[in-house]
Amino acid sequence: MTRWLSHLRAERRLSPKTLEAYCRDVRQCLVFLSEHWGARVTLARFAGLEASDVRAFMAMRRADDIGGRSLMRALAGLRSFGRFLEREGVGKVGALSAIRAPKIGKSLPKPIQMAAARRLADADERAGETRDPWIWARDAAVMALLYGSGLRISEALGLKRRDVPLPGAGDVLVVTGKGNKTRMVPVLQNVLALIQDYVAMCPHSLPPEGPIFVGARGGPLRARIIQLTMERLRGALGLPDSATPHALRHSFATHLLGRGGDLRAIQELLGHASLSTTQIYTGIDSERLLEVYKTAHPRA
Image 1 (spheres, rainbow, N blue to C red):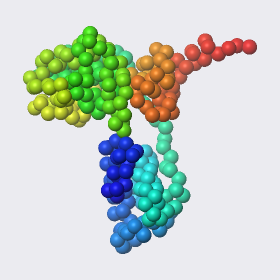
Image 2 (image 1 turned 45 degrees about the vertical axis):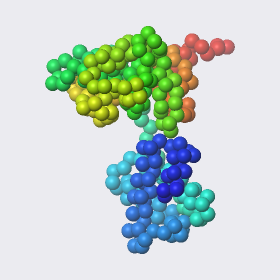
Image 3 (image 1 turned 90 degrees about the horizontal axis):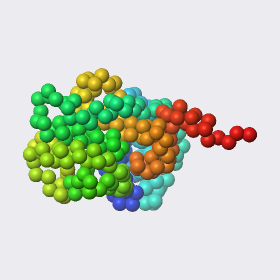
Image 4 (image 1 turned 30 degrees about the vertical axis):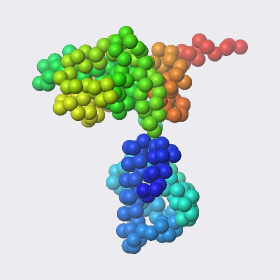
């Protein structure tokens, strides 16, 4: 398993979170099989895995109220492990390819309305909280960055101070996304101004090579802090539970598409490897697509 994970990390360049999930899924399967078979799981025994064994494992996971996406990920991890064992000459685990992937119900992202998304990036909305003003400014800057540039929260919190230009000195960020892939994304000047306001107020040292967003004690800012901030703001602004930091990324894509943005360009901005991932936003903005169809389709 260690060699398999090293292979995925070095050659497939999978993200640390994906590697962690794959490792956890395979370990859970091995623990289940040892109990299911009543014997220690060896490489030879695992190579002789039958479809009924895999189905029993999936049923056990389903009984734990695991969703379809998590089951699909678990199956993908097991298949990857099986392919690695085959390349290593251990034997082919044919049962894994014989199992159908679980069905996943299609659910559209729930974007936040444009006015509400802007209010989330307003530090004045936090007035009255028993926290230091620099923390209000920090949270507002992070929210503005998520909505203004469509970043994942991990991408925003992974930015170094040297990565963020001063207002008027640049309008592009280079971010590191999934699989350690980098991409360039535009950043609005008013967002850079909010970030600079936070930097000026921050009581902690922010060296160029260190993270630009820090926690209350000066360490790297954790995603959970921003999630909790969003939970507080949801109540203040009357937003639904679907209004999460990641929903700001959905809102970025949806509002761009609604203003006539090109789907391929949005794919690049979001850092999606496949256009099919970006196409979920066409389901949200079907009214806009109908308008394009009516105005652009050649008539006989």
